[in-house]
Length: 484
Image 1: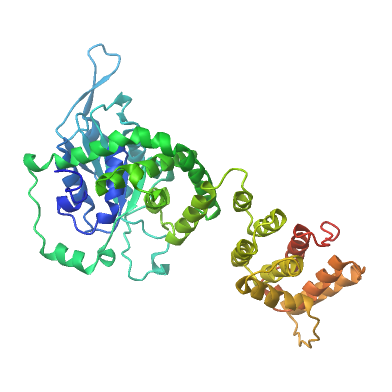
Image 2: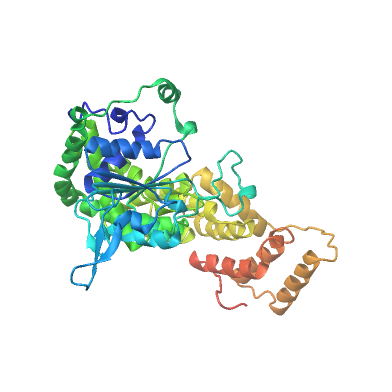
């Protein structure tokens, strides 16, 4: 069966609804990368692995990690003839001679045994001995139980009390950590096919197509890596930075694996489409598919947000497509959102691009106090020199008017935190009378304009220091460091 006629990886195996994962699974098979499947019970995780192994015609070992003992893996250790080491008397289920090993329920594995799986999964070694015949190491697990099952936001989610979050070091050994589709993710047609479909008959006559498909991928990988290495390296460097800022830190090992995964998925997509890789002009699509299926946090208690992954991917893809000395690239590589606005203004990026940066900066701030302060600084810096889009200028003006438009307000302040805050602000202003400098005047207006509601949820001292930094950042008279 040719690649074009194979119909993917999972469909010929009689597995329904997994088509979107075909490029990832094929890429993993081509580079012999470890795979961890994460999903609820009954989602065909074990079925997929067993049928892939059968289609490859490899000696297969299926281990239930929750019941596994080390002797089940290595056999019975006995002294060697010289009495200086050990030899292993293999049992029928030992890993020696296996071509495909599957560790089911790996999240229920005892910690001491899980540590012994590290070298098998990552290095294809056991007890210090190479396993040259072992090509594929896959595993499966249910989603880990939350720390507080009763407090879960998803009332419909299954809770697997025996499934523990995978040790981060073990999860990091898997190239691909794949969230598999459940019933909710299946289309209507897939649901019908699942209910009424017949199981395929896997025989020697039907096992040749998958190795051929894998060969198509491996044949193009060296040339593809040479052609794409520069772009992919730039992409992964920025991607890992963005993921870290989004609360998804990655190890240096993962950064290297991500680069190889992107190229392998691109080669797999080309093989599945029956075309040459250079004919696929959407490397960004391959990159997003690879990244979504290659983050170890998918095996954790709280899986990564698709929105966070997508935002990191889009940012990294845009950066990687620009020259190293490009002004817009310099702006995008600035980690602080407000810093991007200030740098973009200094480097003369267009008004449309600067408007986008302003909107992103406001959206990144976590409190009204910070938004008012940052908006005031940006409004004063940009109002006369830039023609910002209404979507950016409008929010700046609305927020800044609280500081810039004088108002007389009578507040009834009862004894309590609000009154204490007012006394502190009054004492501060008394110690630092108006100097006539713009920065001091703005600081006073910011403190007074924010009372009482802004200071109910944000410490006014911290907010004032941040406001002065914002003024200084945008070239205004912030007098940073001149006030406590």
